[in-house]
Length: 416
Image (cartoon, rainbow, N blue to C red):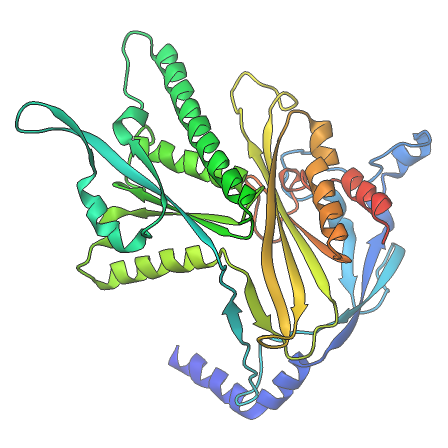
């Protein structure tokens, strides 16, 4: 290993300028070569007008890679045997990750804090039997650790973990599950209605420009069982964050009370820093650029779906999906430095009950129109599919959020 390391160091020392110069090349030309074998010619001859999917398909449907992908090559010149057509691609590189020493350029960043802040804190409580035999509804003993994290004026949502815990039942376990699910749903609706009324009242008083930070205090973390009340509190808080984000900027962050002890150690220090930075990410971020911004405003829509009624009795067409979109905008700024300000916009949610609705993706098109009305001429679509692979995979389960029909509809609706 030492010999390999020494050889690499020697290459970088003697030929670093050549390597850097190649990386610094800002333009490149390649060809996407499509072979004739990509088309199922027998199906094409027998096809009627309007027939779709005339490309080669795999005989084994369990294969992960799409069959047609094997008939495309990226080449420096269009000289591929059996070529059907080629597309020339000119790449203009505007960013570099490898630079020579002492040629670095600093990038400044700064959070833009809100003038008004609304803190929402989930506080665990429990029933304790005191000396005289009476029961008292008391704060969890560990909440003392969170005093420095709670503002003097905040909305406190007090909950009893035991009342949300699903206990085993031997009489009728299925009926018991239904009652428990109804109780958790009722708890979610009651908390949402209270928060919505308070937020609406704040807006009516003329204070519409504020940011909400939701801090979820818990006695247990990931080690708690799936049936424990803490797990359901997490699910409820996450749901309310997504719903309230349709109207106000909000960020929910959970913390195990044990990690907020005053006796600091290295692990608690990193955990608390992570909690603070997660809450800080709610606010807009200003980032400097090497050159003055060319585009005035850029939009980004991050969207995802996941099953929400998965059972063994439902077919693929009967399953429903929870569809979520989160929009962002970057706006050119001159102060505090020249660059862009990245800001989270609204979040939208919907329940999709059919494959047709999943193909149309109404929410994404609504968000495109929303960002377009805000002045975004360039909009980036970023999809996240449930159970999707990360890199170099083109399996069918990953293409549910980018069907050809959806992209064609978007280009027709928004041609510019």
